[in-house]
Amino acid sequence: MERFLIEGGVRLEGEVKVSGAKNAALKLIAASLMAPGRTTLHNVPRISDVGTMRAVLDGLGASSDFSGHTLELDTADVDSYTAPYELVRQMRASIIVLGPLVARFGEAEVSAPGGCNLGLRKFNYHLDGLRALGAEVDLDHGFIRASAPNGLHGAEVYFEYPSVGATENVMMAATLAQGTTIIDNCAREPEIVDLAEFLNAMGASIAGAGTGRIVVEGVEELSPVEYSVVPDRIEAGTFLMATAATGGDVTVRHANTRHLKMEMEKLREMGVDVTNTDDGLRARVGDPLDLSGVDVSTLPFPGFATDLQAQMMVLLTQVSGAGIITENVYENRLQVAEELNRMNAGIDLFGGHRALVRGPRRLSGTIVQSPDLRGGAALVMAGLVAEGTTAVDGARHILRGYEDFEEKLSSLGATVAFEAKVSS
Image (cartoon, rainbow, N blue to C red; front, side, top):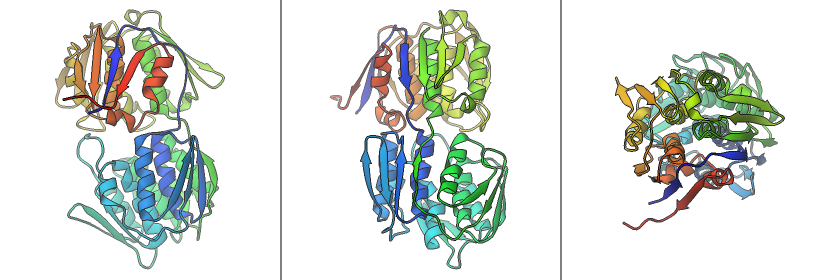
């Protein structure tokens, strides 16, 4: 068992640098499959999910070298289109190799992925999108098998819901398809834009990324490039909210205000002093009791990010007044409230997707269990404001998405320790 131990009651102060975005880096690694040769990625976070995706590519026949935050991937000798079952089951983002493999080999076999327990996996958007491009796709005994022996062709693809992963899979597959592909009601997240810019640098022709309509003109081949991963907006938002909850003063370097529009609006509505700096954002709060509660509804970008919902829940426990959080993206994401209630958060749940948070609450340190990646980070954040010591078990979830989490918090004055082994 791995855990974080946190001593509460410290005001966060100082400066912290945001790492490269997990949700962008994983997709760029997968996209390198479509450009045989050596691709170099900079600003890659050293987190366990990157290690898993790297292992997936190695299992397909690629070779890689990770030095500092630079990852070199050589996909020239990839000779398999079957992603390793034991790795894909660890991380739901692994399904993103489906599109690149079909585009390169005309064949792909990928296990239905695992990862955080956030609710039902709706793969139909991925599968239907690839079918529209001419692939035959079947889901059989937990495996997704796709085949396009005569190649993919351009088509009009409409998503009922703007799925990030499905948008990425179809966009990548369409890059090497014959003709023009139009993807309507697609995801607009900054990571989509980063992937499109990466593909364009490799020779693709993609327009409209960041809007609800992406147009892809298929090309015959892509070439390896050198590219830098966009900063992680979720990590940035986590540190900004932790700063507010502790009544702190922290400059978050490389935080991009364009990637946190709704989150910044809600923080300012609460009374948090958030200002732009030369290369990031600064959050200042004299006393969390001077902040007021707000209502938050998670939505696809540019709405409030579901990946920052749990952190906002913790912040709401420390302010004056009540706030309602409505989770519209993942049906199981409010389960972190049960762990927070073990710390005396007093959160009421309604209908499985709505939480009423009344502040201010005096949280008490205890042993809690990380339910998922972002919920785990929120529990560490709760430990920062709680009285006494908080032990967050299941730290492996947090390590999937946050690089040097305890070191960064410690640099801001927190007392946080990581324990790799805990005796039973």
